[in-house]
Amino acid sequence: MGISGDDFELEALLSINEEEAEGRKEPALEPEEELSVKKIEATGLRLARNERDFLRFEDRERPDRRTSRRSYFVERGSLDKVASEVSNYQESETYRGIVKADGSYIEYLLTNPGSFLPFGRLFERLKWNHARVDCGHEFTPNIIRTRQREVRPGFHVTSPTGDACIEISNISTIAAFKLSKGGRFARIDMVDYTLKVLLSAAPGVEAGTGTAQRIADSLLFELDAKHGLALSLIPWERGRVPGVARLDVATENTVSFPATSIPREVAALFGFAAEASDNPPFAFLSYYQVLEYYMPLTSKREALRRIRREMRDFAFDVANDASVLRILNAVERSKGLSEEDALKILVRDCAREDKLKEFFESEKTEKHFSSKGPIVGVPSVNLKATNETLATQAAKRVYALRNRIVHAKDDPKYAETPQLLPRSGEAYALVPDVLLARFLALETIADTQD
Image (cartoon, rainbow, N blue to C red; front, side, top):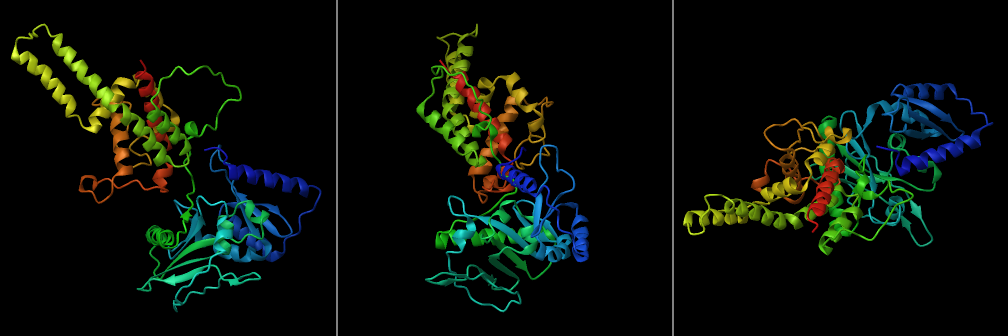
């Protein structure tokens, strides 16, 4: 994955800061600060910049050659606190957040999709009434005073059983460090608010994160359903479809009068997939609907092929009932095709075998489509398989993935295959499958031109 917009902005800010700092001597570290720096560096970071008000750390090693080192900021006044806590927390796996080593505390960043206001600005406008429960947790909300009113944004509520609390309040010092971005210090007037789940037991990271995820999902649902406040957690990686997002458009492009004849419905579906480039499941379903549009046509072509084959049989006799019945059976078989079988025929007839093989041979896709890939509950694609053609494997995977996206979990027919949820880790790992559906849609459109 290349450098994101946030990464680019961060590198630009750091470059400007470093240029301005040239010729300016870094302030000396106090002995206590040196000790704190060593504790932080022991976790795999290194001190990259020492400013008057804050210190910047970065990863000692680059995650990979395509990804830049992340930066971590801490105000000098918080250095000792961060140093004492940093080894007890790790980043949560799927969403931008941190989890305590024993799994008893999980903290997530939040965003409000579709709003131009930063989440902090929006949240500070809201007032919350909540029952005060003596759960033993300290809760001190931020106080916002204006000429008209005083607001204490945030809340802390406890479950009826008392085994879990959930809170939205100012970001913690340790989360501000581990999840920091360059913009945090550029806007010191901006308060970050995070969602925190506090568990009375210490179930371990995996169990604690699972419980916190369920509680957070329930809270965010109710905030939307009851108050019209649509908030969401932020995934570590937002899957973006590069071929759809048109990020690699050439500076000079040759254009001519369109030679492709495409139905309006297909054009609309194909275009919507491009608009949904930040939402891989939506993009996938749009391309699937393009394939779905052409399924009846390819099914008819299959029926016509079978009928012609029967008629070309040297033993065919129009006066013989058995001969005519064979033609009738060919028609009936085409009518009884399932959607999956229709898709198999479409991919077999429309997708060029060499181009399909070329698609799966790419280094970026080979691992994704293997049995060890990130998407579960769907067939893998094996280039060396001898029992099924590549077209059949591709069609089976696309159809199974379509079912995972559109079918509910509690349908017994799909009980063994969990639903693929939006904004999940799998959803954002879906990009190669979206590109597969897009490739098949393009092959189908080209093959069905008159």
